[in-house]
Image (cartoon, rainbow, N blue to C red; front, side):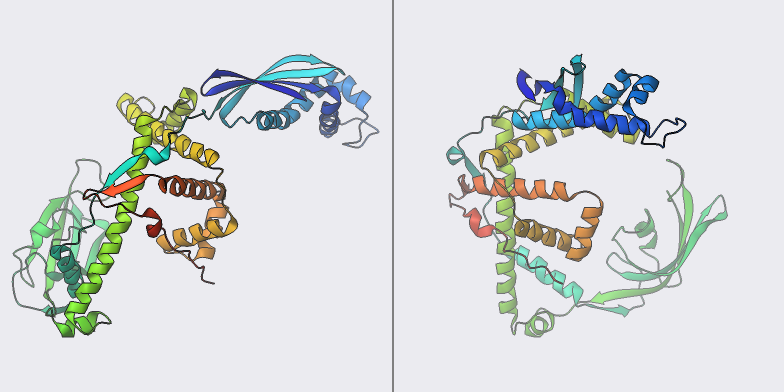
Amino acid sequence: MKSAVEKLSPTRVKLSIEVAFDELKPHIDGAYKTLSEKVNIPGFRKGKVPSAMIDQRFGRGAVLDEAINAALPTFYSQAAKENDVLVIGRPNVDITELKDNEKFSFTVEVDVRPEIELPNFSTIEITVDDVAVSESDIDEQVQSLRTRFGTLTTVEKVVAKGDFVTIDLVATKDGKELDGGTANDLSYEVGSASMVDGLDEALIGLSAGGAKSFETALVGMAEGEKGSVKVLVKTVKERELPAIDDEFAKLASEFETIAQLKDDLKTRLTRVKELEQGGQARDLFIEKLIQTVDVPLPADVIEAEVNDHLEKEGRLDDAKHRDEVTKEVSQTITREFLLDSIVKAEAISVNETELTEYLVRAAARYGMSPDQFIKEVSDAGQISTMVAEVTRAKALASVLGRVKVIDKSGKKIDLEALAPKPAVAEK
């Protein structure tokens, strides 16, 4: 097989491929076998019909069509690999010459990943926010701990924001109770806005035994339609918070004093903000690359992705939404092209240990065991996507080490010190 590549644009190429007929012969043999399975000829079993009879019944042209259709993907992939062409999108194939028992030629036009000229990363400077843990940050964490260790006490009072109530709800429409519209003995924090719109306003000012009805939009109703909900307060409870002292520190942590607890909270918050610095540096770096590096985009690929997205939403004719989706898809493809160019330039690869560590951390984020998460990812055919994510992240970390990152106070940030430690899978 001979092949050549012609660059039509920064994102599209034309592959010209010439195949010697002896290379096509295995596919022709396969075509005869396939066609012999489809025909019934007295005296011959399916799959055992002689080639001459296949030619007589279907014609030699049908055999060659079957063989070429089977062979095209193989020769196309081989040519793309030989010419170092990273194809994306659907190829357009044109058979240019077919001489039986002599040669077979065809061309393929296809979108490709563009060649991107990357900058000298050591000349790039990124400025991130300072790490600053305030007393209010620490107090907020202490308050969160107090809330966690607080106790609820039944009280005789009118309901106020922050109280906990036990309530019954009944939903109706035009005076008729809705199916599934009754709920009893619900525990609810007033002011959390976590249940039904209008519930908080209805509850405030009521006492135990009090009831009130209000109009609100309910699940399953048409837009603009409302039903009526009656709420009955059965009990009112206040949360009593522990005092902020050494006894509380012993209750809520492994420390003996509140001062030690606050010092630990400050250390933890500092670490969190340092990690946020690393994330900010990464995002700003990618943003700077997008703004300064010329990244040609394949219009056909973008249009296909946009149409696929809009078709799933049933909004193909929504021009305004099309513009929004086109912008999002363009940004995503630009980012992927940039990161994949870095992967190629840095010759980044991912080993099994690195992939496993990534999957273990991802499983923890989803609250799943590593084995369960890996099985679901594998069943969904997403392993290759995971590999691409890990490879891009590794490439990004590699070049970020050369970028000068400082905070707003001028302090140099060591991003390598913020890298996550290897995870260990639990069995």
